[in-house]
Image 1: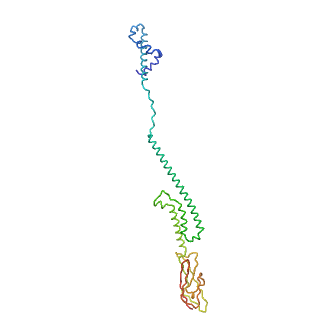
Image 2: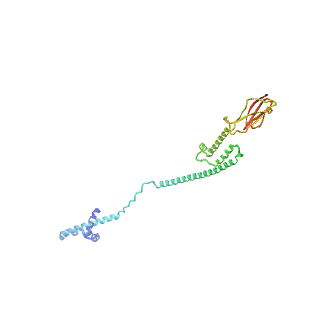
Amino acid sequence: MSEAWADSVESESYDALGEGAYDSEALGEGAYDSEAVGEGSYEGYGEESRSARRRRERQRQIMLARQRQAELRRRQPPARVARPARPAGPPPRQTITAIRSLDLETKVSLDSLRRTLEESNRRAARATWAAVAGAAVDQGIDSFNTDLGGHEYVKAGARFAPLLFLSPEKTRSGVEGFVTDPRVIGGAAILGIALLGTWRTKSATTARVSIVSPPGTVTAPPAAGIAAPLSFNAQALDRNGNPVSPQPTFAWTSDTPSVLSPASTSDGNFAVQPGSKGKVTITVWAAGFSDQVKVRVTAS
């Protein structure tokens, strides 16, 4: 008998007899036995008694069914409450491994960043010292330029020395690291400028000396006459054949002063001695270069 049918008649049974009327111990099964009562009893009570008996029998059956249902409930284990399903995701061990790997990568990145910052600070400090040393060297060259004279390569070496404080980038090696080294770049630049300046200086300085001479033959005055003046001019030329500016100081000489004697060693004026004759070589000197011209002196 289903529990639903028992519940449908529950209210009616309790209202008619009450809870105590259905106690099997108080009434017992024999109280409702049809044989004990007999059919004659129905005749005594009439139609109404038979109706009440059927109702009581039905109520008894309902009560027994309820007792059976209660006994079944006590014997059955309580229903378990279903736990909510966990969301799908990686297993705990995989999650822990991923977290540890992330921590390791973070530490490696921080260490790399720390080393990069330390290297940058070290290079910046060395660059500062290089700038200070470069300024001191420039001032020393300006102050002692006279003592250094024309030693341009010594000056270039002094200017290169402060660049040794610089440090190259360690991320590059081999030929690329050597070419991109700031010390190599700075040294090559200083050497190139020094060579260019030397070439320019030499091209603008005296390369040769040329005498602008009078006619090759000069007639000497009579013996009783006065020595006639004779002037020579010279020019200092660069390697391109152009006159340098300013012109250097010239020194003049004569190999035969008895025929042509220099009035002054610096102005190129010579005096032709009266009554003299012969061939004379005139030489001029300037900036380490010289030139000569031969002059023939004849008697008047």
